[in-house]
Amino acid sequence: MENQHLINLGIVLFTFVLTEFSAWANHKFIMHGLMWYFHADHHKKDHKSWFERNDVFFLVYAVPSWLCIMFGMMNNYKWYTWVGFGIALYGLAYFFVHDIIIHQRFKILTKSTNLYVLALRRAHKMHHKHIGKEDGESFGMLFIHPKYFGEARKLKATQK
Image 1 (tube, rainbow, N blue to C red):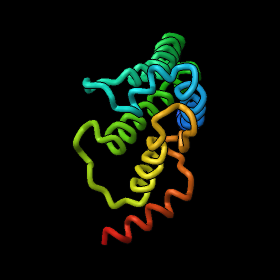
Image 2 (tube, rainbow, N blue to C red):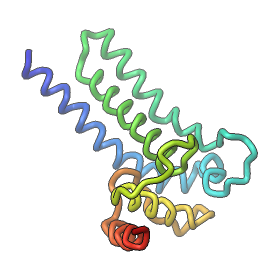
Image 3 (cartoon, helix red, strand yellow):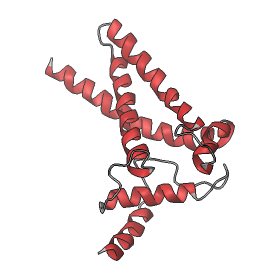
Image 4 (cartoon, one colour):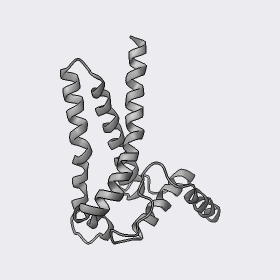
């Protein structure tokens, strides 16, 4: 039985990592492509509501996650149950990293000298410098280009 727990954990972790690559591709080719209408307000900040049209993308991951978990549990915890939990875990990480740490939609954790957090915020800032759907950069969330760590080191040195 212990072996099965490790396999399930492996499926969750593999799915989590795979979801980062899926999110990168969705962000680059779908959100900055066919579905720009929904994502545009996230870049332009021309809305008056706390919610954004961009928040609809939550459903892109929440619905498959929920279905995998629900149908997996209904079928004696089949492997896709753990896929659903991997997607859900990524969604939780996305909320924490993107909405709380990067965009600070909730005013907690606003100050940080952590190198990863500084690099993450820098990469995302570079992504948002483009208000149109073309010419974007840095579409990922958790895996960021090493150049942003260099920029974060310089920033951190000036903060001392």
